[in-house]
Image (cartoon, rainbow over all chains, first blue to last red; front, side, top):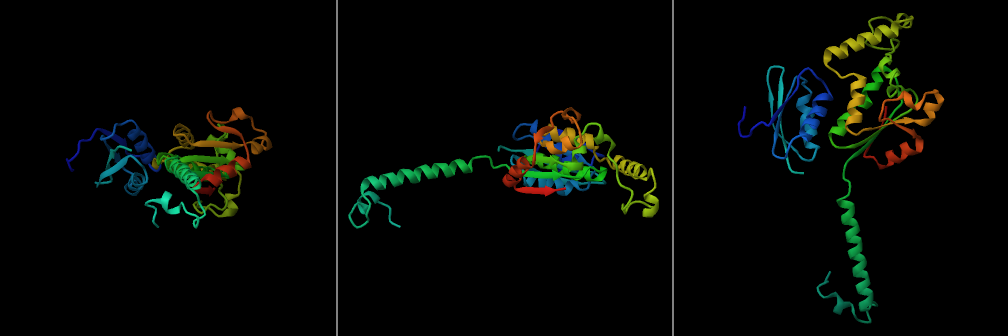
Amino acid sequence: MSSEYQTTETLDVKGQSCPMPIVKTKQAIDELEAGDVLEVVATDSGSMSDIQGWADGTDGVELLEQVEGDDVYTHYVKKTER
Amino acid sequence: MSTDNPTSSVDDSESGFDAAEVRALRERVEELEEAVADLDDGDDRKKMTIVATQGSFDMAYPPLILASTAAAFGWEVVVFHTFWGLDILHEEKSTDLKLSAVGNPNMPVPNAVAALPGMDTVATKMMQKKIDENGTATIEELIDLSLETGVDLQACQMTIDLMEYDEDDFYDGVTTGVGAATALQHMAESDVQLLV
């Protein structure tokens, strides 16, 4: 995994399916400060496309990286200045 | 267009404008520019209105999933529940929504059998089991989540009266006392409108 950034917090949404990974990610991001990086660990394969779509369509977040493992999908989302 | 020195260039008899008129026009332009700027930095959130008309177990999901996801995008969301869709917001009925066994392509029995008493319950149980195994949220969870994230869940007043429901029958936070005109108003202001 890339280490150009430090993960501030980890959100575990393993076992949860659409729309939970997105909704929980949004709620977790709301609790963070600009510059913080949230690690989202999911088992929902749809989260690869959904997190990307959400990050593209949402102000104040930047998708840094998505890592596809064995049935585990890890996403790194940075909270940015609006 | 040459506007480098408008006061002197237009201040002649041919243009038909005198200096006072030009000044008034410039002020008007400034006013309009400000008004346009206000529009730009106004609320640029996307808006979605969903009309939920169905109250079966399967049809309760799409509006709630789309609504809570749209809220995660920061959209302003209204879900107007009317006719059978109202049962989704009914605290008691929402936990007992049924899936129809007849005409359900997932049922392993012919429609003639699916029409027998109790088959809807069987179909619903099967679906509930699948939902549970898949880690899909329950209707109740999605309603709580929607309300928590600022989705405006509206219960059509006409249908409340028609079904002889009481306003207290609904989840806390549900908007009552609204009708078709309110729904239309939201639809007209929305970027996305869906009928489910």
